Image 1 (spheres, helix red, strand yellow):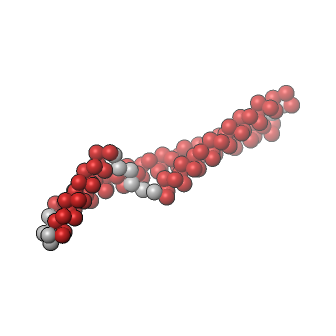
Image 2 (cartoon, rainbow, N blue to C red; image 1 turned 180 degrees about the vertical axis):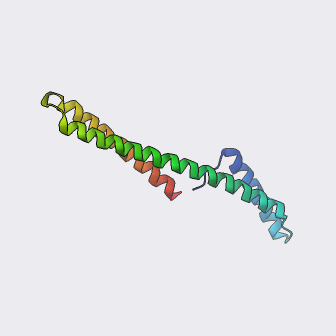
Image 3 (tube, rainbow, N blue to C red; image 1 turned 60 degrees about the vertical axis):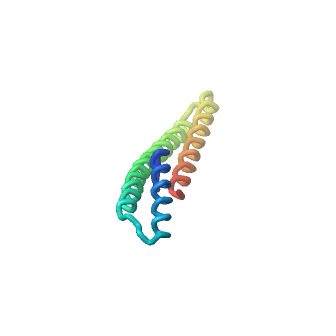
Length: 107
């Protein structure tokens, strides 16, 4: 996963266009390739950190769901509706976290 900042994206596009024009002229500057690789590496590192953070959020949401389910099962009859609502909210957080992780892994 890559996570480019706006500045990195602009700089990478600019370097790519410059390299493309040089490739057409058959005289590519190796410094352009190094700069693009450096930007790609920084974006890959940032993307890996963000993906790890998303996995942590997902794991925490799953743990919260397990706790909510246990609380619902052990709640007295008067507290069941509140416990059921807490479980439903925990399930929603798990779905959102899983969707975010899936989306990040695809890109």
